[in-house]
Length: 295
Image (cartoon, rainbow, N blue to C red; front, side, top):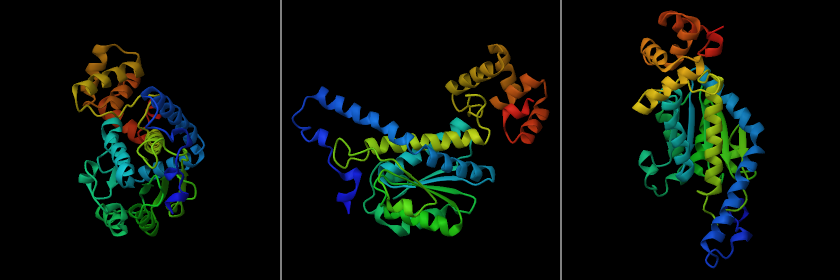
């Protein structure tokens, strides 16, 4: 079956990698990488459908759950762990599952991706519900761990999305929405950590960022729910407040403290003159959207 997959095909441009110069290879690789964003663009309508499902899940206190194996699982997990500091989500709100468990992020766990049972077990462990959206990621589109996970999610009534890099993939058939990013053969035959991995990262970026915009985690192009977990992010929060309200640094610092280190609340307080308690009420009534809260 592998010989029919685009991700396993030989790239005619790179049949002599062991003979060309370093710069020649890097030039070809760069040109091949440039094809990735175009391939992603072709799937924007499907990506938009997936975002709508994810946003709907988040609004009803459901979750975005990535499930994958190997590189695909690591990419989903990477996107998941970046959401709490960026968007102020709870750790359990965006989840990354990888075949073989968290230890597989660092070292491959042999045979884990071939286990259908593990795919179902991992979703049961996190108590999957119909409110959640499960995004199955597999470059080949044929990973048993992911297919079984998507099939189980369908049985539970969750929303399901497949992200693969081959046309008419098996995981596409197991999901309600199929995103198929066809990048063409890899420069190194079958090495799906390259163009396939890059395209998966781009799509995961789009899914989580667009969904968070839809649930009020952004004002303008500012991440107003950023968590202040280190000195850099404290300073970023002050700058966000300054940019959103045109106030000076001292004012931003003062209101950030008044808002209990919540940039979103500080912005609303400055723009409306409301107290912290009134601001929280305004944001709750606006479903977390700053633009609605300041009207």
